Length: 203
Image 1 (cartoon, rainbow, N blue to C red):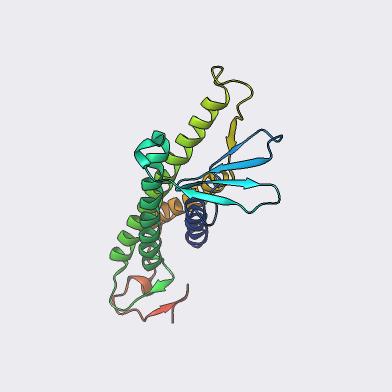
Image 2: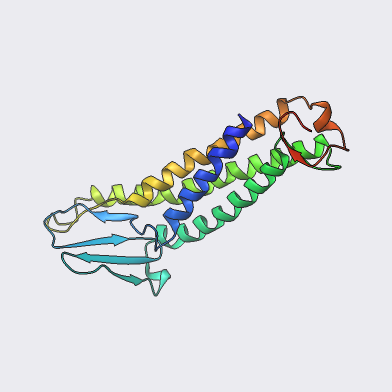
């Protein structure tokens, strides 16, 4: 399960990075009206307009304070989540049971594994907040009766789905916490003179 957590967590981190980067996937909100000749995408950093038979034109947000609150806070949280996720992956990798380093005791490796798993859980929570907030605001706008029917309504963009996938994949770091507390150290891992290798049986 530790190996599964280390494999799923990087996938969640990559999904969150793709959902955050404007050039990769700017569609956090998309219109639902298919009759329009133009298609508008709203992302964390810019708004894009795609016209038929014309290239897509994107304009970066100039004044973030003029944006809705969810788009003021979400970019900051998404960028912060990347730092938490990357640091959690590094600590979890060092504390992984099969990765043995010279003069690193098992107790210290277990603490690194627990800390890395905790940061991965925090990484998931940090992604969950902006994704849920933007999704909630989109649903409210969709069912708002005060908005005329002729005005295009907003729907979930691809970036929201990718961010949600990143949350569930990043939760793979949680088994790292559980197994770090329950696992019994093998003689090779517990020994401070273990050789620098990455094998489940040791060398």
